[in-house]
Image (cartoon, rainbow, N blue to C red; front, side):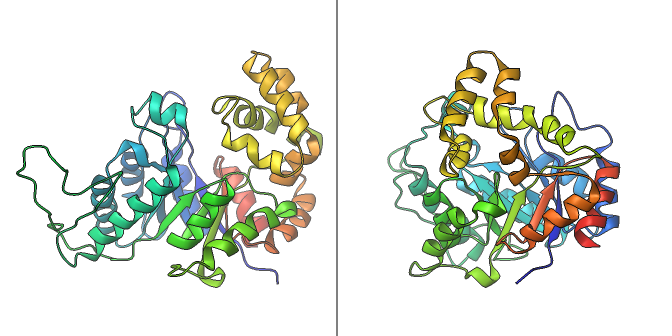
Length: 346
């Protein structure tokens, strides 16, 4: 059954400084009826400070992180930030979490990357215990033991000094691999999908179904949110739109992560594009970025994006309305947002 899609604005990463005109763009998103606005972090700007700064000028739009890097903060610090943001926004905060990849986790944050699924489970459990505020929080670890074993011997379990505005602050998990997607369905309120195609959704639906079926799963398919990042380019020529997207996909498929561990490239590989992705990685990591971009099949870009004239995009959106996706996250200026509102919201 076709569903009504919501729209979110993804402000993305900073490139040297705040995105030009972003405050006005966020104001336009709220005026147009966008459901949410999202900020990101990797190894430059953080995502919480801009969200609080820009969110202070909004009234209705939900404020989400896509994503808070788990390795950047202990669970208690993230829980505190989430409670604070939720109070300041009047209950509009959405905590998007993710483990990132080993290059960033170990190279930038200086934290171990091993056992990401177990770490995520433990991390989310501590967040919910802190927000529940039923008593002093303890955790047996092994990744985030509370209180810290050893040390001075003076540690004691603590309970948050403030009451959360909401004990059930929504948690969305940024995930790409099947096991992590299943974990999102089991533990969280939503899934942040970075690379999604309505033509290959069974790859994701099966993983979600596994998570929903686990004992104690928090949500069902009916009340679970799927927010997918979908590039949108309105242009007269489809090939022009495809070519404009090539550097973006070349970066993620070819340059994000090591050649042996690139979670982004694994998504199109599972869709059947293994040979092409191996070539893209080889070319990109060899410094031949333009050739890497040219190697990405136009068909794949069209499956993951919305590009071309409005009439074509309107038709393409019908496939998205038949999927598990509940929110489309787009990036762009105010004109792009207006196009998206016209096409998606009607």
